[in-house]
Image (cartoon, rainbow, N blue to C red; front, side):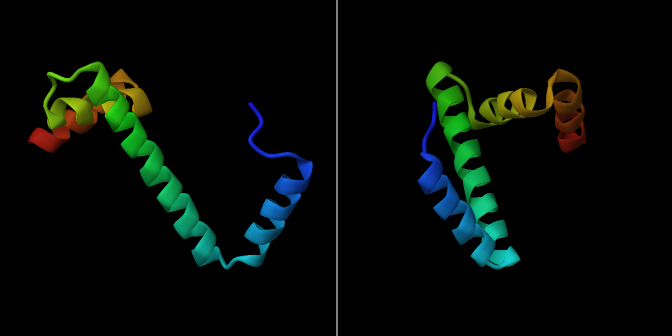
Length: 78
């Protein structure tokens, strides 16, 4: 699925190059936050009976895999 054509991509990349590092970092952080919220919403829709902590644990599992997410959750409860 292509969201932009060649012309739009070139314009977008040029605008990114014109931004400061701080501006680009803010855009990246905002996008990351949005993606995480979309993922949480999808998990909540798949499992409406789950608590927010169960949804968070599932998000961690999807992001980092079972082994790492288990370690994170264990450390958070200590």
